Length: 187
Length: 187
Image (cartoon, rainbow over all chains, first blue to last red; front, top):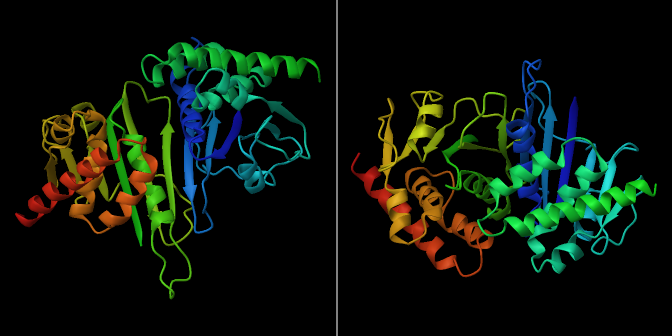
């Protein structure tokens, strides 16, 4: 098992938080079975080079059954794009197998591979808290792929958000999950 | 130039934020000179393995003049320890040259190498916001080492904290800086 996820977005959209929670979840919250000797390894990185300017942020996560020696993500298995700026910057770093999730309203471009349009920003606005758009996207990842169960990630998110915001985050996760299940069913 | 910094602390102390801001600062806010062809590279990682349990968090930063291929920090140049739990977990991973900064009140153990006792938590409490203890520690790093200038890091911090908390963060940084300058002067 070897999986990489890249979250990209503009400043304030919580791409980094999303990556941290996913990485933590993979390792810390997963139920261990009696037969399972070792757990998973995960690494979450932000890397910056001289070319990095502007307000686009990128957060990479690698999850593996084995210790991770090369932590960079060159071509992600899953790419989440939360703004048009982020799309311009990172949409080329995909393969034909990359699953792409874009924000339905904020990304106008069309990926050249299979993609899902998730109204993450819209759902977050309806909850009067745009900052949870990243949690909607995490819910959508759970709905589309099997990398992590919704129950497990919910626990991790609720442990890592400010007190008082638990209900909103739970709703954001659930709505992202449902939207994605429907989209997946219609494909 | 090749420098690694490790922030360790307990949940909620902002070790991860501290690492992210330092990494970003090194690359994004540094003034470029006309003679300087390339900027710096930085990577900030959280890595989790099966052995990671409990609420201690660790945030590693590497800063270099060249692209970073091995992003892990084995022995940091600077180790920041914000809680006794974090001390127990990470204090052995140092060399005789590692500069250690510990929280004056929250860490009771004594490092075996040169170290500085920074009253980060106490200063943060006086500002009625314990969450800025990490910013005090960043100020202290600036006061002790030359890896990054206080002016540059101040700009980065103020760009990355919630609106309305700028003054408190500026004060936290300044106080950490001053405490560290005094400690350094007395050595």
